[in-house]
Image 1 (cartoon, rainbow, N blue to C red):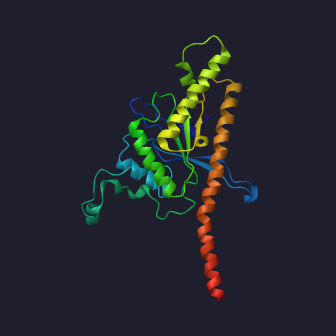
Image 2: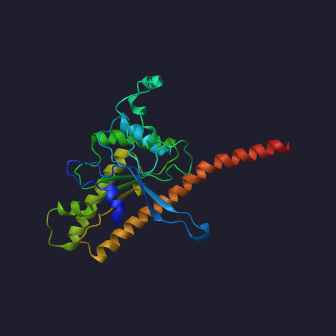
Image 3: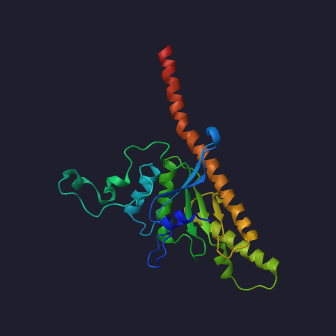
Length: 255
């Protein structure tokens, strides 16, 4: 479950707001091991995209580049400073407030793995606007070295409730699996991702039983394992060119 102090920062309770998380916030999934023998796992949550426009595209770019500060709203200003003449040459998509940006980005401030979350109970996932927007985002992510972003579809329980009642539990389970497979295949085709990169999970509930929570934990941990593996791959790909460059410099100095 989400710690109360984190939930207060990221959960929007006003039904007029559908953004979910408002700020670029972090949660420590696993702290650094004793003596530094293992690294920490930190998850950052972002504001969901609503308008699917160039401004939100630029917001994602700032996060992927590691420029966004922690616990800020990554959003452009809707005004320019009159005394700063160069601001009038900036496009609207570049007007980020300075307090939202880091002075210098590096590998530590960049995300090492990416997860896109969709409401799997919606009839069309993703819809046409989302498909165009996220295909572009996925292409940008690949160009930056994120070759296997994970796609998570939530709310299996809501999908199950929309299905016709069936007296045979085995038949009901089969029909649910077929429906989930169809939804996953639709995401694969629309977004151009591999099938193993798409996952369906159930949300936690206050009324959940220990058995249902254990099942949810299992599926979430599988996704986390995938993310950690791809994070390792990303880090190696980013560090390898530097290692080769350093080796070449050393070789040149010897010659």
